Length: 72
Image 1 (cartoon, rainbow, N blue to C red):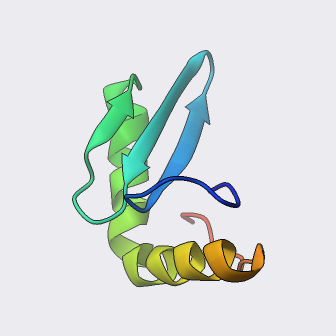
Image 2 (image 1 turned 180 degrees about the vertical axis):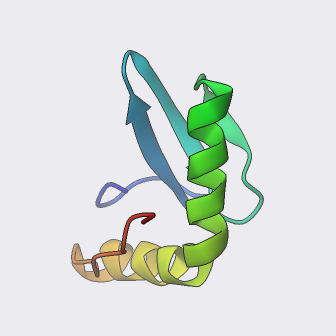
């Protein structure tokens, strides 16, 4: 996520030479990403959707965010 980014709430992902944005509410992807990497991203999104939305609000208001745990 980036401070002062545009709506809808989303986060950016990078893997090797691929880049994409993932909308938090519905999981729509803008960009390209290998299927295997997307599977992991969607698993993480499902686990942390509420935290991601909370961070979106925090970042837009204060520029701060809370760390979200990676997949283990």
